Image 1: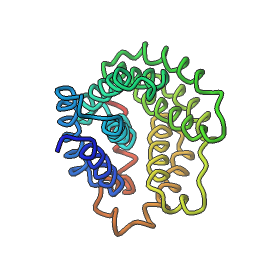
Image 2: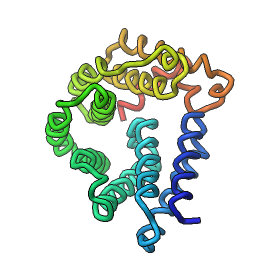
Image 3: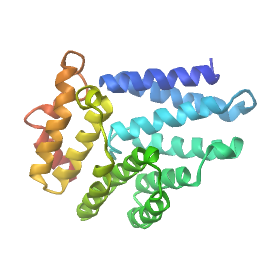
Image 4: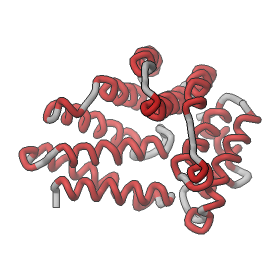
Length: 247
């Protein structure tokens, strides 16, 4: 049913598949999220904030876990729908959307539209607006910095700028003892760092990041050995990264 609980279930299923590296079923949930938002636009009087928040979360999780990959067939659609979801949430539930969230999604949209100069110009103001944070919000700031670094790493001749953002993000990445070996978020974060380091020819930092990611992968090997993540730990991963960033 196209209601708030249905949207929440789409988010929960989608994230579960994503953490397992099941990209086929993840993408099915993403397409379902598109359908839910289309229905929301038609009959919004029957929807609440939980549904919109769930849609925003699954779309953003997908972009983060796939590294804002321009070559992903769903990338442009995900960005466009995410932008519409945030703007619609701002319209229907203005107290639930901050200005920085809108700015962040607008940057994703600029990147999707390949307006790279606008992306770079907008990132500085976004980061400046988020720097005065409490300890609790540092994790959120590190995620913003890493997302921006992933985006800039894909812009020609801007890899060193992405490294500057990573250098700001890394001190804010804090993992407890259980997360160091068990957290899919930790594994994915270091896979993202590895992509950025590879694009900038930071070989030692690339290998260190892959070592951190592999600790989680090894812990959950039986679950992840046939997953979306498995090829990233093979010997040809480094060559595939070079190929990706030369496109």
